Image (cartoon, rainbow, N blue to C red; front, side):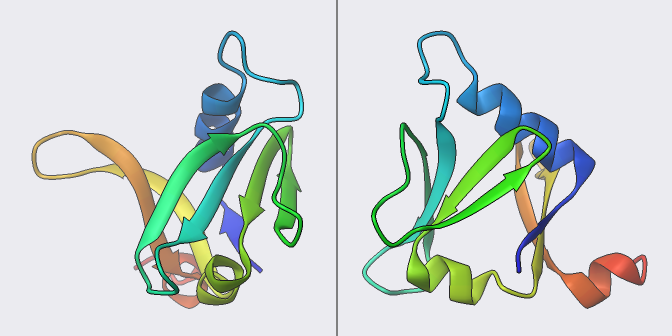
Length: 99
């Protein structure tokens, strides 16, 4: 199952609790055309077949393909070479070993 770091939990909670967002909103992660390209959006409710993850007040909705792809991953946050922030995905084994 997808794991979230404390930083990722806080970012998801911040994104989904923006002014005007429904109380049950979550970050929906889905795949584009069944590929390993992930799309993220704030959703008011999960889609009918979404897997729902609740972590300390943050909610993530995963479509079936995204759930399968992210099953052994950790969602974290980081910055790219340009200093832009975003989500980072790592293998759980890499993350727990400190790499």
